[in-house]
Amino acid sequence: MPVRIFTKPVLSIVLVLLILLNAPANADEEALIVVNDFHATLLQVMQQGVALDFTARQHLLREAIDSSFDMQMIGNVVLNRHWRELTDDQRAQFVTAFLDLSSATYASRFDDFSDQVFEPLGITEMNGGRLMVRTEISGPNMGTVSLDYILHKPDTEWLIISAIADGVNDLALKRAEYTAIMNNAGFDALISDLQAQIANLVANYR
Amino acid sequence: MTGVASPATSEKTIKAFGRLAGAVFLLCFLQSCATNPTDRFERLNRSSFQFNESLDQAIVLPIARNYAAVIPGPVATGVTNFFDNLFYLNTALNNFLQGKVGQSVSDLGRILVNTTFGLGGLLDVATHLRLAKHEEDLGQTLAVWGVPAGAYLYLPLAGPYNLRSLSDIPMRGALNPLFYTHASVAIPMIVLNFVNRRANLIERTDIRDSSALDTYIFTREAFQQQREFQIYDGAPPADNFDELFDL
View 1 (tube, rainbow over the protein chains, first blue to last red):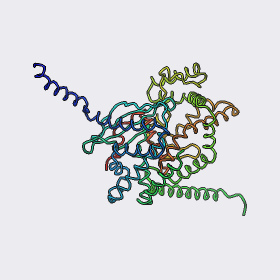
View 2 (cartoon, rainbow over the protein chains, first blue to last red):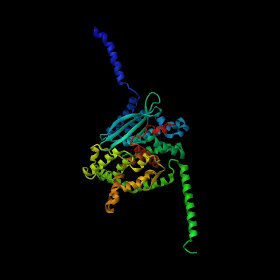
View 3 (cartoon, rainbow over the protein chains, first blue to last red):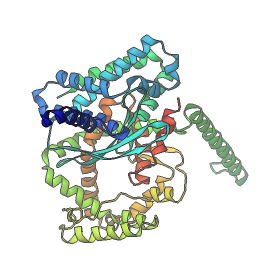
View 4 (cartoon, rainbow over the protein chains, first blue to last red):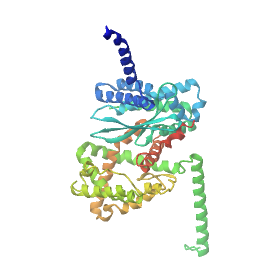
C-alpha cells in the first residue's frame, strides 16, 4: 500500500523533470537546435550522395530551408527599399524564386560525403535581439570552413536570416547584386535572371 | 614648319595635355561616383574584370582543370604547402608589425620546421605540431594601424584589391625568394604556383558562377567582406552586420 501512495507523485515529478530536461534551456539552445537541424539535413543529403537525384536532393533541402530560414525577412533585407514597393504577389514570387535558387545551389554543392563534420563553436549575442551561432565544417579533403548563422525570433521560434561562410555574408552579397538589378532593370528582370540561374544550375549539374 | 617644337610650344602642349588628362580623369571620377559610391572606378574595374574573366575562360581555367585532373591530390597539396612556406615570411613580418609578436615567432617556427622536417615545405609538419597557420599581409597591417581601405580596384591579371592592399604588392615581391633567383628557375616556379592556385580556386569560382547573377558584384562584395574577416583574424565584431538589418 505505501508503494501505491507514492507512485503517483513520484511519476508526476519524473514526468515534469523529463519535460524540463527535453525543453530547450534558453534562447541560445533553441537557436542552436535550428542550426543543428539544418546541418542534419545537409549531412543526410550528403551521405545519400548520388543515391538521391538532383530533384530529390533539392526537394529535401527546400523543405529544410523553408522551415529553418525566415524567407520574408531575407527578402526584405536583400531587396532593401524595393521590398516595400512590391505587391504581395511579387513578394511571394520573389520568395519562391529565391527558395528555388537556394535549394538548387545547396543541392548542386552538397552531393557527396567524405567524413565532413559540422561542429558548433559558440553563440554570440547581437544587437536587435539577434544571435550568431558560430560553427565550422571540416573534413579530411577540405580543411576547415567557418560557417556562422544569424538568427532572429520574430514570433515563437528562432529562424535563420543569414549564413556567413568564411566571413562572407550571403545576404550582403545578394543585396548588392539584386538591388543593382532592381535599380537598372526592375523586378521582372530580377525574377527572370533568378529563373535562368536555376535552370542553368539544373542543366549544368553533372 | 619644323618637326621640333619650340620650348614655348612644348610648354603649351604639356599644359593642354595636363588639362585634358585632368578633365578626363575628373569626368571618369564623377561618372564613377554617380554610378556607385562604394565602387568609384566601377567602369574601369568592370573592364579589367571582363579582361581577366575572358583570359581565365580561354586559357587559365582549362589548364587549371587539366592540372587538377592529372595531378594527384597529395601532390597538389604538397605544391600548395611548398609555395605557402616559401612566401610565409611576409605573414611572419606582418604579424610582428601588427604587434602580434607571439604569432610572429610561431610563424618563424613554422618556416623552420616545414623547411627542415617538412622536406623544403612540401609537408606541413608545423600544423601537426600545433603551430597555427596565419594569413597576414601589409594591407591588413595598415588596416590595424587605422589606414582606411580606399577605393576598390580590380586590376588586370592581379584581380581584386583596394588602395590600401595595393601596398602589399611591393612587400610581397621583396620578400619573395623567387624574386632573387635566376629567371630559368623563377619563371617555371611562378607558372606552377599560378596554375596550382587557380586549381585550388576552381570550387570557389564554380560556386560563384552557379549562384551569382552578377559575378563582378559578387566578387567585389566577397573580396571586401573576406578582407574584413582577415583583418579581424576571423572574428569580426558581432555588430558588423547591423547595418544590413536597419530596414
